[in-house]
Structure formats: C-alpha cells, structure tokens
Image 1 (tube, one colour):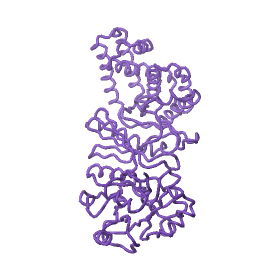
Image 2 (tube, rainbow, N blue to C red; image 1 turned 30 degrees about the vertical axis):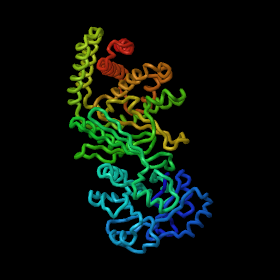
Image 3 (spheres, rainbow, N blue to C red; image 1 turned 45 degrees about the vertical axis):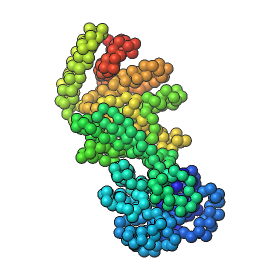
Image 4 (cartoon, one colour; image 1 turned 90 degrees about the vertical axis):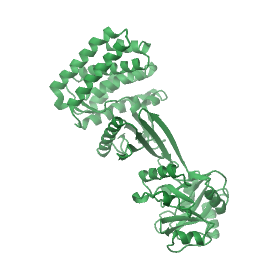
Length: 495
C-alpha cells in the first residue's frame, strides 16, 4: 500500500499553507491508501483525527494517522508511535531512550547539499532514512538514492507537503496492509517498505543510462524524472560532456519551458563521469508516427522543422571549422573502406560519389567557413521527443531534442539534409508515413521560421542528403545489410 509519510497542516504547523481537510482529500485524490500527519512538535489526538475524517467525508478504508517532526542534534526526525507531543529540541539519543518502541525516520538528510556518511546513515538509533523528499532538489534525491544503493539501509520517501499540490506526490510503499500506527512502525523496523519509484537501467557502448521516476503524478500529470548517464570511456565522456554543455546553454537561452525545448541539466560530475539531467514526459518521433492520426503526425513533422530553425537562428559558433573538416575527411575514408572491405557490389557506383561530396564540402569550407554555425549533427526522429505537460490539454504540446554529442560547425543546410535522409531511411518500412510527411513541407516550414537562408540553400540540402546517405550506407554494411533491399533503394537515391 501507498502512504503519505510526511506532511504538515496549517492548523498546527505555521510553515504550512494547507488546511487539514484539503490535505487528506488531496492525498486521497492521488489514490494513496492513507496519510501520516507529521506536524512540527505536535501530535494529533485520536479525537482530532476522528473529527477530521468526518469533516473530510472519508470512509474507514482510508487511513489517517499521526506522527510528529522534531528537531534533534542530527536534524529533523519523524517520530512515529510516540504517546505524547515532543515540545522542544531533543537529542537523538534521548529521543530513542524516551520512546524505545517508536519509529524514527531521519527526514530529508540530503537537503541543502548535505551528504551524510555511512556512519550517520547506518546509525542504529534510526529505523529508516527519507531519501526522496519534495524538500530536496532532484540532485539531492539522486544522492539519497545513490547512498541507499551503497549502504542498504531502510529507506522511505515523503512529500514534506506544506501546500496542496505537494501532498501525496512522494509516498512510501509498504509490502503488507497497515491498520494502525503500530503496524506502520513494525513494517518500518522490519524493512518492509521503500520509496515509491521506478528505476530502469539501459546500457550502451561505454555508457550506462538509468531513468529514475519518483512518486505519483503531479497536477501536470507528470512524475519527477531523472536521467543518469554514467560514462566508462574517456573519449565518450568528452563527447557526452560537450553535448551536455550545449544542452545547458540552449536551456538557458530560450529552450527551457516553452513549446521548443531541451532537457534541463542538473549536474555534470567530472569525477564520477556522470551527467544528471531532467527526464521529460513523451516519446520519440519515430515511435509516435506509426501510432498517430495522419493530421497529428504532420503537425509533429512540421514541429521538428520549426525546432531546428529556431536552434539555427541562435547562430551559435562554438567549436572550430578546421577540426570539423579533419573529421569529415576521415569519415569519407571510412565510408569508402566499408565498401572496399566488404567487396560491395556498389563500390564502383559509390566511389565517385564519395569523392564528389568530399570535394564539394571542401569547396564550401574554403569559401564560407566564417558563416558556419552549430548544427545538431545527428538530428533524426529518435533524438526528437514529443510530449504534453498535461495529457488532456493539447495546448501544452512540446518538442524537445536530445543528444548533441555529434554537434558540429557547418552550414545550416547540413542538419536539414541529414534529417531528411535519416527520416526516409528510418521509415523505409512505413511508406504510408513517407507519403504524408513530405520533404517539401519540412523545408517550407523550416524556411519560414529561419532568419538567414542562403541563395543556394536547396543545392546544399541536396548535397548533405547524399552525405547522410553515405553514412547510412556504411552503417547498413556494418550491420550486415550491405546487399539488402534497403541498401539497394539507398544507393539508387544516392547515385
């Protein structure tokens, strides 16, 4: 069962803005099974609880219990099961001696940047640690999760609600039914409880990505999400850190909470090679388009063009064009080697194309390198997130873009051509989507949103579409599809 373990009312806690009736109704609305009211240095009596239940019109199946939050020498502690109010500050040692049977939970110990060590977290006088709290930042909640995994103590979560929209957001989960405060204490002491959250681990090459979703849905129907990226390779770390720095810059410069977004970066931890970012509700464009109505899909498709144009309009010039060309020359060599190494039947067709595109890029570089701007470098449907802040409100629709690890200084036409080729390749098996998500519509939308389109823009887009096709072809060879129908279609488009 799910219980709100930490909350305050305006009746007995001066810091709270929520009336008792509104508190319990909000927790009930969140579909929790009960609430523990934990006022500062005040314990609700049974008669008060009964009166509150009547006033809130709650049935007997919804639990209302009372504990208290007290000031100690280690900070705030939730006291559950004491028989009287604890009116003033008290040491943890005295608290345990006075109430040996009570459940003692260390409240929000990671608040304000505090990082308690093993000895404090495993203090035998404590029965549990509150690792997730609305009174801690997302980073501090992550530190709580990390400590729990490392030291294996008993953990709970609590909203520390002082306002209505906080109530019931971070409940604790209990394995067995609870009817009384004594049951609650027993379950905590026997470690049959935990924070209510979901942790999903995804591994890739030199990177481990963990998505942590905490608590219940808020008023915006979204849960608190944290994305953790642990990097195991120094070279990969540099790329991911570079990507996060760009993301952080964009977040601070117009791509935060409006319709066009990037994720918020919580921390870049150099020592641990760890990136912590805010997770976002939604699905990537590739997964969505196969399951939505045509008109909705067309809207999403055009949004991707609008996002890209707004990004390019920032005209960011981070990086060096010279370094880009060095990498491009190596890429073209690797594309050719892929065909040569596998004795591809398309080698004779593709070799002159590789040389042509390589020379064209060199020409653009020599003539226009001063006008190069930052491109995403890997702009395709799987790096584009579509979501809504409120599920039933279409006006809260947003588009967010992730993974700037391949960002490069190039003409803005690079991202456009790259996206169009990747889109066609990724939806090769879905021709019905390609029929209504038309290249011309993407380009028209992009141009309307853009503030600086060169005269030969369409020629450049065509060039970079072929450049992207070469990249896709090399990938198909790598995964054993060098002579597949998909490869045949790609070569036909490229030559």
